[in-house]
Length: 129
Image (cartoon, rainbow, N blue to C red; front, top):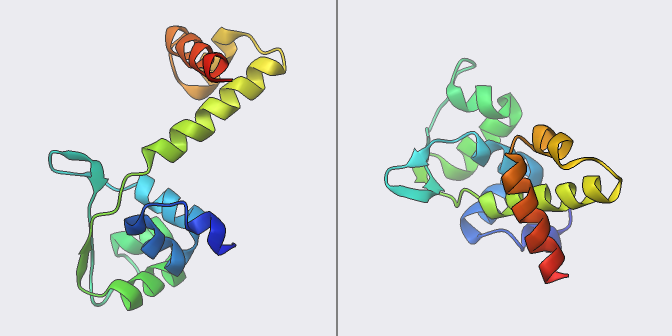
């Protein structure tokens, strides 16, 4: 993975991506709970040692969990939740499906949004083009 792709991530996420890769970092962060009242942040404690049945291993797999322990041992990480990246990808997919002739209600089912919300996204995307 080229550094230019990782550089677009918030710094708090980039640090994780440099250890386990961009895609795995984004997937991992997507599984983490929100940190208190700060909905834009998630929170995870990285222990100094892990066992095979540790939650970190369940989320990342043994090798990547070990990499995280080595890099962030004993730290509490609060990376950005990166929802903006998911929304951008989702919106591109909505437009792609629409351009391929898929009906709004089918797109809504596929992306798990209401037809009203899909129409809003389409209007916003067409307005910015």
